[in-house]
Length: 456
Image (cartoon, rainbow, N blue to C red; front, side):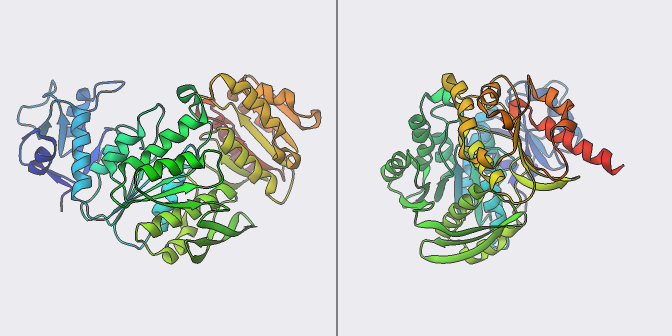
């Protein structure tokens, strides 16, 4: 059965279909397009109408366009609309409208993508599961995910993100979730919001799209929890809090080798599960996921059992043995809350000396230097032997550290990567973390290259 026929897509978008085609997928990138996909010619950094001919030559079943591109025959399989992004949005809304399963939407300052993947893996064996690819959580990622959703989907996991005020509510209304979960609220994108209360209100806007009598899964024990609860109440949602004081709460979290053993109480039911990671924050998000999936009608015991199949995505906290060291690669993103969680994870691991390698945290606004300096006072630092860092913001942290913990500070991550051999020793347990734009991941690459050289 096809994902979209020409007539279905035309009816959904109000566009004009050329040809009697059918497609099995939806793509916005000719580099990853598969035969039978609908190529969506978005106009962003470049006008993708320039790549329609290439997409068709690679086997695209049709293309969503606002005009017939140069070099494309007039009888080519096309769907012509007034505006391509609006056409994709309309296709996404139609995809959501025809689906009769349950939708879970996830947002938060930290952990959206890893939590979405955790939910996807936990649902294994419980029907047709559809989830956002990668971090597709913005104005084109959400409609693209919905447009790709098979009509017979039983559970859909939609990730929703934001950089500026007013982004989340329209995307949630498009997704129309039955359950919406907020992982946490932290100091991220402060340049756009000014204060954490503004971030909380924007995150809470996800509840505006909830289906009637929907469920809001919110983190307890935050300074802004009441703001989230007010947003959920305004939407008429059933509220389930997760955290140490929540209706969904961990009863026991134990570190075992490179994993966690967790017992949790999920709205009256005791569940045991394991995670292949050592971060307590992952265990807390797993508790929230189980509460969300239970609210969506999934089998919570089966979900807890399947949770052990989940691994953190690359750069988001996976633990690996690399040569003579244990590495926590958490280099994809960072803000004060996620960095504190990462340092706590590192300090809590048993074994050799703990080493942190940190890059700048970005988009924190005018108070960014104080936030970086405060990292030196994090309680977890007591259990960390030394800290290497890169970037002008992390210099403030470096200078605030006790002398015996100061490792190497470099102007940028590339300089630190060149000195990778000086950063760690066999037996060390190492955390690498920073904002993606700090490029601290180059240090991870350098450490992996050193381990490969040692093998040779």
